[in-house]
Length: 224
Image (cartoon, rainbow, N blue to C red; front, side, top):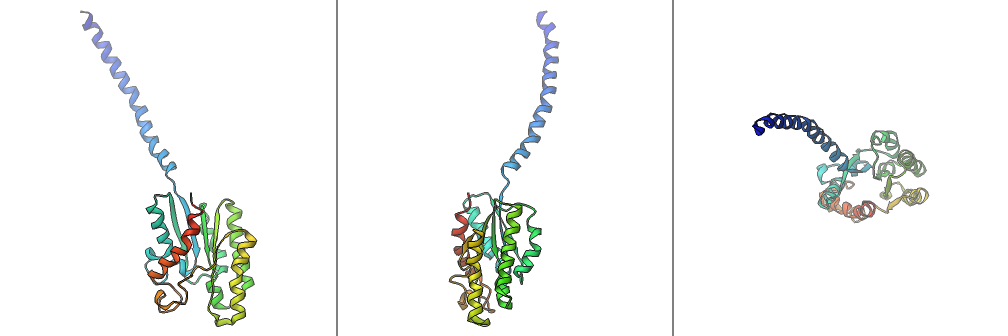
């Protein structure tokens, strides 16, 4: 008799408990993906340059920015690489299009521009001014971004004096703006026929592997 009286009460309580816990469980399930998304957001490495960065003449997956992503992935690091290379780009062009790439904060900004300036005979002082302008613009918006400047050299087609003056702008900019300098991006690649395409300017896939090995130690020092 006693059991028959309490049985309906227990049933009602069980139903009430089940109905009350379902919304809470649903809310927890909905909230969990949002928390995970925040925790797994990757930092950005932005390569901002010309055809060298873009991987002219080869598949983009074989260019040094993509090789950087491959190394990062193999190490299990939470970084994504953005290839901001544009064939034919000058320092002036880079300065004018930079805002498009600064919607999100880059953790590391690799600046690879100036080669086309040198090949076109643009005054080194102008190229230097544009490089400084790019660095200043990045720092004005994102003061904590780490900046790497990739040094460039050109053949002596414009005369030895111009060639030396052009070469000197990179260490000068790096010193004035206190950024990390890669002395020469194409170290052990530039001027070596078998590591460059028939144009003698753009690296082959093998050349890009060497370029990657040149830049990686500088990036490795800055990633966490």
